Amino acid sequence: MVFFTCNACGESVKKIQVEKHVSNCRNCECLSCIDCGKDFWGDDYKSHVKCISEGQKYGGKGYEAKTHKGDAKQQAWIQKINELIKKPNVSPKVRELLQQISAFDNVPRKKAKFQNWMKNSLKVHSDSVLEQVWDIFSEASSSEQDQQQPPSHTAKPHAEMPITKVPSAKTNGTTEEQTEAKKNKRERKEE
Image 1 (cartoon, helix red, strand yellow):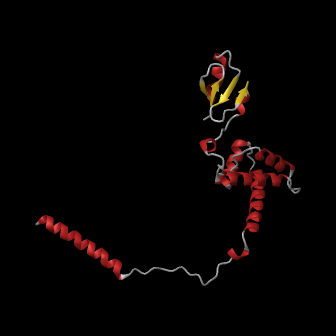
Image 2: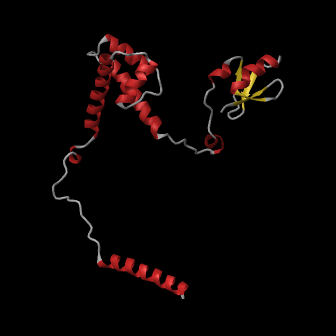
Image 3: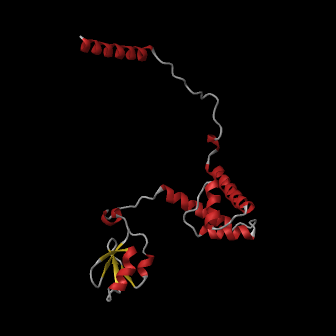
């Protein structure tokens, strides 16, 4: 959640409440973000959606922000969409859909969720168009995975067989000893 400070009256305000505060505070022309300290004049605060984290603020000179695994995958997925737009063999209708898809940051990577997302977000209800778009994605992702995997991992040698463990006599003996110890405790209590 982003918080701002009014430079006129000094009141701290949540982003949701800024418009209400601006209408009440007559001298409010500039807002400052509490976390990063940037000044926002007029309606510039609306573009300030995400601010620096505490780690970045207090981390020191050598602080390096960790990239989230999901963000990296999503960026790779969007990059793949942008590459597919440039291909010459894509129909104009599908190309237009791909351009619309590339504008979003939350594109699903699984078939069912992707098609449901396209129906709800882009209002595409034609099953044939949905299948065409997904086929293009799956073709591109399968060719990309083939390039990334070295050929040595594709075939497993037959010599590797799963080893089954045979229970030893020692393990059975410990359970019997435990039950005898329990009986002895019960017998002691009864006595």
